[in-house]
Amino acid sequence: MSKLIHYLPEFYAEITDFAELATTEDAELDALAEAVQRLLDDQFVDTSSIQAIKRREQMLGIRADSTTESLDFRRRRLINRYSTKPPFTARYLQTRLDVLAGEGRATVEVDEKNYILQVTFDVPDAAYFKEIEYTIHTIKPANIVYHQSTSLLDTIVLQEHVSATPLIRGTRLGSGWKLGQTPFAVKGQEVQLV
Image (cartoon, rainbow, N blue to C red):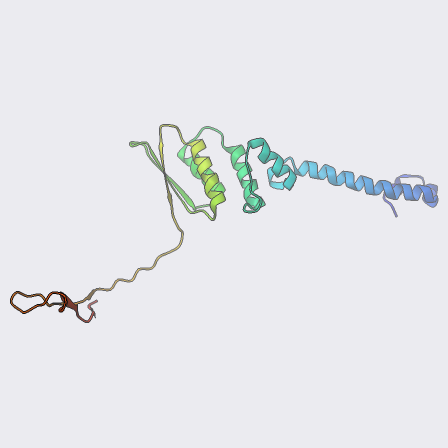
């Protein structure tokens, strides 16, 4: 039974035309409620539909590649572009990079004496790299030189060994050494010392 028919007097429920009309109008009202909810969701980047994301990217002049960029990354990029407003400080840049790439994946160092901005970051893919580059170039002042370096958050284990390989020379004065027949030196057996 339809929800709308409950708002009408009871005798309308027994009339087939009104019952069908109420059922049809219920479907229309449900579709309207979904459209209103979608409109409200599209007001915020975090809950926007794909169509709203595309519209916002077009407004900001972003050329998105939906084959390589995830919807989550596209939302992060939009939030980054909307929130990149002055004042710009090293702490602000560090915060923006933490939001964009993830906590602890980027470090910002400023050499005030030499006017150098050093940013070291570890990014998962090229789309994040491009957005980080855009953010840095938007935020950094014109008189600062930007140096970028990429880091990996993997650990490297080193093992140290000391070994010696003796070389036995075959070229001594007066030894009868013949050019092209006898080697200059013969490599001995490698011995590990430590």
